[in-house]
Amino acid sequence: MSSQAAGWYDDPEDPSQQRYWDGNAWTDHRRPQQGTRPADMPRYGQPVQHGQVFGGQPPVQPQPQSEPRYGQRLPQYQQPQHAQYGQYGQQQHPGQQQYGQYPQYPNQGHPQGYGYAGHGAKAAPDGQPLSGWWRRVAAKIIDNIIVGIVSLPLTGYFYYQYSQVLMDYLHNAVRDAEAGTRTTPMVGLPPEFYKWLIPGALLGMLVAFVYEYLFLTKKGATPGKMALGIAVRHIPVPGQYAGGPPPGSAVAKRYGFQVGLSVLGVIPVVGTFASFAALFDYLWPLWDSKHQALHDKVADTYVVRV
Image 1 (cartoon, one colour):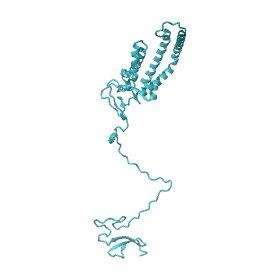
Image 2 (cartoon, rainbow, N blue to C red):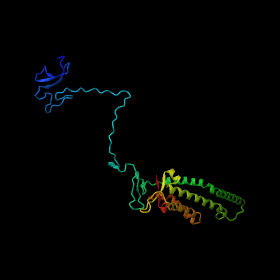
Image 3 (cartoon, rainbow, N blue to C red):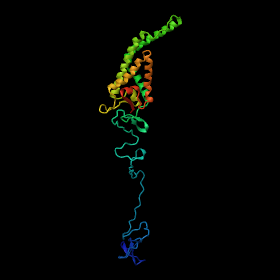
Image 4 (cartoon, rainbow, N blue to C red):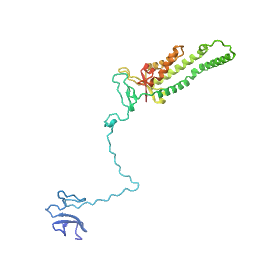
């Protein structure tokens, strides 16, 4: 059999079956003689052996898998795509809002449809979270510094003259007190104070109004508000106004309310109540349910974080 070609031949150990000759030696693969039930077919309940084949063909020897060489890229496996889940474990669907995004709250026909944004923060009618009080105060301080510097070419001369009158007034008061010549105290300020103070204050207010008007109507935020990441929005009115940056009339109402309190503050007796009203105007967002100041309520505006 040493020169016999590979194939199935009578098994020299069992004539009732055949055995496979690979050309050099007998293998362990056997099959029954033609016309009988294959001897290697498993009986009912009998486990199949690993590598066992049926049907009379010699088994294919598995090729050893070579390990990757140094620097060879390993096969990439695509990560399975899992379903996205929203808040409270509900599965996300196409077009559904993703977890962590601010929800949009429709106005539903009401001009003041306030809701809640992400993480419990209160939201404005357009879905943006409302600004806190400290951001508004810090932005106001920055804007006042900018306006003071910008208006200085117009107001500098008047404030300089006012400071000279003030220094002369204080010098004369100290001199009279030391000499004991003044017998009746002076009530109010001398007319020379108002001669320089009023024009300087009016020019400063004019520059501040132009500053507010241009930035709020065009961008919805002054440089101070931009630095703190907040902006002014107008309350949408169904069928009339869709919201967004405040119009010129709303800016005039906002600024006019604050200037009015400042002007009333210099009037005797009335100025006391005006000063308290101005203080309440700045503090009102601390306890207001919509984080609005009094000048926001007058102009139908609100301040949001952007």
